[in-house]
Amino acid sequence: MGMSVGAADGDEETVVSEINTTPLVDVMLVLLIIFLLTIPVAIQTVPVTLPSEANVPTVTKPENVTIAVDVDGNIYWNASLLPDTKALFERMKEVAVLNPQPEIHIRGDKEGRYEAVGKVVVTCQRAGIMKIGFITEPPAGVMATGGL
Image 1 (cartoon, rainbow, N blue to C red):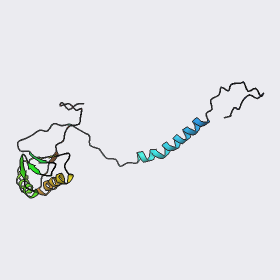
Image 2 (image 1 turned 180 degrees about the horizontal axis):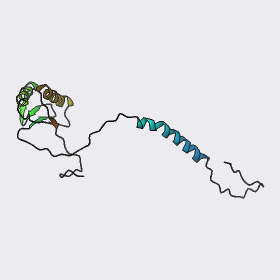
Image 3 (image 1 turned 180 degrees about the vertical axis):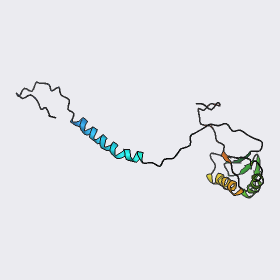
Image 4 (image 1 turned 90 degrees about the vertical axis):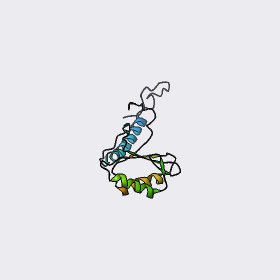
């Protein structure tokens, strides 16, 4: 690959019509090196099956229990206020022995502390509740039919 510096006879009026490919080759080599360095990092991952998002309407059965945690950390069993997590634990022990065991649906205020919702989850585990679900708002733009 040669470089053209002008006419051989000293005439400076001649137009050089060749494309200078040296900068293009430099850029391509740099890109090739970057891709060779980053591809092994992207390929070497642990194979896991990630969950997919699904907008499933909640089927409310009469035996399901809804626990709400407001912004102040107050805990509500269905619609009645509970004084503390000990009272919640006692109520959960009563429903944990039922057959079939009811589902616990937790509704946490988005401005509330995670600690309050975490205490409810730990109380569910201690009482032996097997099914816990979180009630959330559907993403924006999702219709009631479940499609986009």
